[in-house]
Image (tube, rainbow, N blue to C red):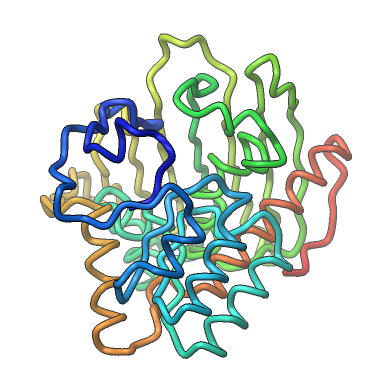
Amino acid sequence: MSSNIPSVLAGDLSSIQGNLDIAGEAVDFSSAEKFADAVECVRKANVDAVDLCLPTSMHAPVATEALRAGKHVLVEKPMALDGAECDGLIAEARKAGKILMSAQVLRFFPAYLPLIEACAAGKLGRPRHAMFRRRCAAPTWGAWLTNKAASGGGVFDLLIHDIDMALVCFGAPESVSATGHEDLTGGVDLMTAELHYASGLNVTISGGWHLPSSYPFSMEYTAVGDEAAIEYSSAGRPPHWYARGEDHVIELAGTDGYQAEIEYFVQCCRTGSAPERCSPESSAAAVRLARLLEGARARKGEILPCQL
């Protein structure tokens, strides 16, 4: 493992936390190699693959070193800070002949799988409207998140999940528009984005950091077609299916999305199979769209063409 915090190297992960407010636990690292530098770790560690959970600005340089050192790479989302960095990583992975995958974990979350499957199978009918929302207070568990050079900003880091999900379910839009406000030092980074499709479909992506510290992290979606609708909220409402004569809660598998994501990556490494379920090219498209939406927000609602 790589860290420059002695207590973490010793196995005390209680200071490690994320948006879901789940603190780490004590882990026995006595048998593990320990490094204080991430680049040294990926170069020298005697492993086949690495899972990079680093500030976003470190994704491209450290993943590049890992691929050049002959390691398969699972890199946290967002894949990199911009499309050019993503393209560079994809090229490095092809050159090295190694698996590269970005951890867009919603693709493996039980609550989001029914939505993905319904869209893929056409169960909603012709899509009419969709909404994705993700929001919380500005995080205090990592000072790097409020440093735009390190994280890309709160909206970029947070809403990348929903941007990726919109692309998975509905493909790239024809044009986009967005409004919102950014004040990272004040703990605010907010966006309401609209993805406009040639079919008439409109997808809204909304949220960011803009709530009191006592407000819990939340995520939700609604997708409506001319034959059915599906809805979910982390605030106690499991995925629900609505259709003509149908109204029921969708039974979910008891699997953990993070574990499923890692297991899929490991299986791709073992078999040498491309991660088609979560390809690096699709994760790069999410980064490009996120950056385009940030640009659209700066234009205060102006509709911009989308070319990913």
